[in-house]
Picture (cartoon, rainbow, N blue to C red):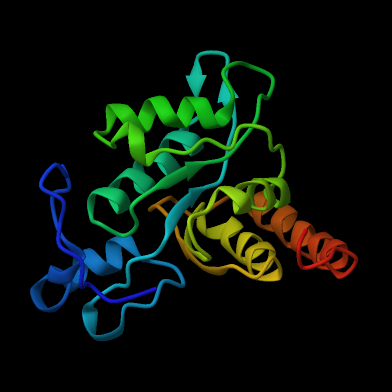
Length: 200
């Protein structure tokens, strides 16, 4: 994980390099890294990949949660936060898989097809991250999910020895039932991870 030292690719469509994220652009840093992602001196670090955790695909298309996470991942990629994106999520009640739906959204947002690596078998947060790990080019990852889900995702990633940060899209405060459910899920995951090896 290094500072901004590489030269931008001539073929890149990225609109802004992270090296300009200091000073007057500090507000952009805060937008792209609102949760856990440290920005020392206003300059963010390039990570190895952006991991997008899955959400439902509805009968009429991707759910708002899936669209929100995918759009945020595309923003990060365009900003140069990492060279690749791994959308995670298998097939739910409605096709296509969550990962495939995100791939379409990412392509529509201008992300290069070569930068997208699908993980399309997982159905849980643990599986999202565990299945994606062999696909990662390195251990340094940005996990894109919602604020309320970030702590559990970070718990899993760090248990699996990933140097993970969470970046969450802007979203209204979740309903209290979501917060209660997530608190219970974190407790369950803490117990589950105790019996799970570091290699998953």
